[in-house]
Length: 314
Image 1 (cartoon, rainbow, N blue to C red):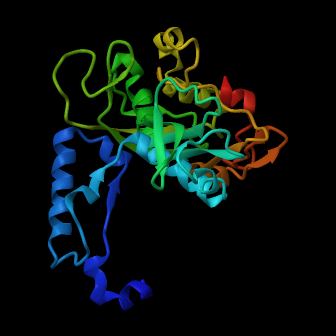
Image 2 (cartoon, rainbow, N blue to C red; image 1 turned 135 degrees about the horizontal axis):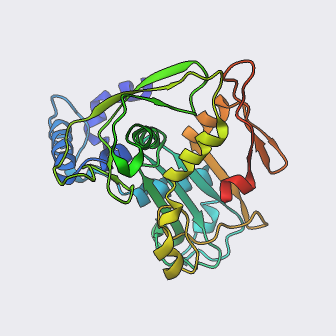
């Protein structure tokens, strides 16, 4: 800020950008347009913003863009991006790359370089400089961010999924023992148990939200019950068409994904950041071989037991 302040006379030459991410992508198109229009008006008004601005510098970016920004940042910071980006054409056989995992509030992203460039969907051509580009798999899972996942999770508890049977107080096995939390949502479910903005009982669009109390009167949480409900959010049972069309190369929620690269000479590992880091730290996690043991004291008698590589990839 001190440097910027010293250049105040040149602010009109400094561009200002706003790249909105998943929180804005959860809005419908008219509301996204309304918000972006207001931002552009403010940034164009030199009374409020003395910086250089044209309308295209403020917009909502796609999920793939958000994913590729994470991948680019990781590989730039680790020194694996620029040397391989010299020259022209397509990057082939880079010495080393890393994958990126980004857990935001409304979405989560995965991005990685596929050595064989065998990417059937969600391909992002990232151009560095004037002539060299990378072919990277990049995908963003909207409503899989930490806040929206909580929103979907709570709605599933309160409404019992497709039944849409509202309960004002409901047991949450993921809460520490002897705790409760107020929960508000506008998510409902259709007859197949898929999230919806209207109930399965009628076609009336519901704009009103509902509030309930999530609580756990037991001495401690129930990891098995908690993980069972959380697993249902992944919607892996909806992968039938993806499994058919892409011969099993699918992740979750019927999304195509190439097989994950193995750690080897030309691929380091995945770097997880943002809320992945916060969850890792809050659970006091540490690495023991390939097994991740995450201990989190709900009270002196309770802890979340075990995450392993096999658990995470089932």
